[in-house]
Structure formats: C-alpha cells, structure tokens
Amino acid sequence: MGKQLAVVVIGLIAFGFAITSNASTYVVGDNSGWDISTNLDTWEQDKKFIVGDVLVFQYASTDSVCEVGQQSFQTCNTTNVIKCFSDGNTSIPLTSPGERYFFCGNRLYCYSGMKLDVIVERNQSAVAEAPLSGVPEAESGGSKNNNPSTVVPSTAVFVRVGSDAIFLGLLGFLGILIWIF
Image 1 (spheres, rainbow, N blue to C red):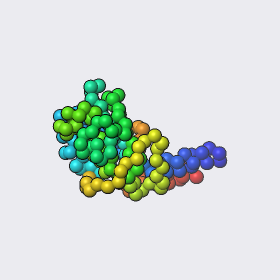
Image 2: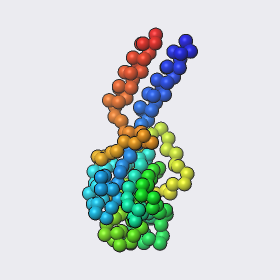
Image 3: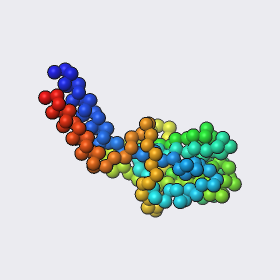
Image 4: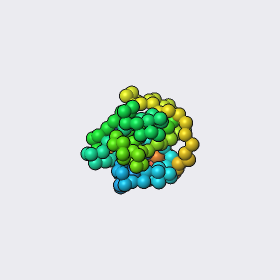
C-alpha cells in the first residue's frame, strides 16, 4: 500500500507541474543573438511575453546588456541604468507585468538600434505571482500586441503547454491508477 501511495503522490505532483507549466525562455535575437546586426524590432513583433518568461541575452564579450527606465531608453542614456551585465550570456526573468527596457551599454550601438523594450503581460493561468527578490520592477504601460513564436525550451524553466497536455497528463495519471489498483 505504501508503494502505491508513493506512485499516486508522484503522479499528482507531475500533474500539478503540467497544469502550472506556462513560462517560456526567449533567446533575444534568436540565432543572431544580442548583436548590432540583429533587427530587434522584427524579432519581438510576433512574441507575447508573460510573467514567468525569461529573456536570454547572448552576446560578444565586447558588448553588454543594461536594463533602464523609459526615459533612459528613449535617449540612450547610459549613465542612469538599473543594472548592467557583461558576462556574454545573461538570463533575465520577467517577474511582473509592465514594460521593461534594455539596451547595449555602448551608446553608439544603442543609437543604432541595439535596444529592446518588452511588454510583460499578467500570467492568466498562474495561481499566484511572487516577485523574485533582487530583480527590478518594470514600469507599467505600453501598447505592443505580440504573440509567442520563437520559444526555446530550457531545463530551468517549464515550457508553455496547452489543454491537450493537460488532457494527456490526466490520461496518464488515470492509467497509473488503473495499473496500481
């Protein structure tokens, strides 16, 4: 009986992950990465970012990515940044709804278009939203209409699933129960 209970508990936990799994990882610029030659406006057009998603910036050691406020973003003001990264592979979780602004720390690259603003929408399927400590809050606002497209699954973040995955999870769980009893 103890072994059967353990299998049922593990099945319930797996089913819980299937229901709440809805975050995506986006590699900014896809294969081109965070680079001056990447058309970032085109890259983000067909994407919808939600709370829980992660932006991954991959770039050369001579570049950087800085998160800034709206005014600094518009003027490429590199002296008033929220946080800058220069490790070449930066993951930034989108922890709250609102607009987030990023640009290259090289002002000339920023003027040339190496900047990105994303609108993060509420995660409608999340039971609770808890902001991560140490991650800056975004300013609210914005008017972009994006839909998800290039999504790169990651082992660190669950992949967005639809109702068919929930159905398959239930079917699998039912199969386990029938097998046990």
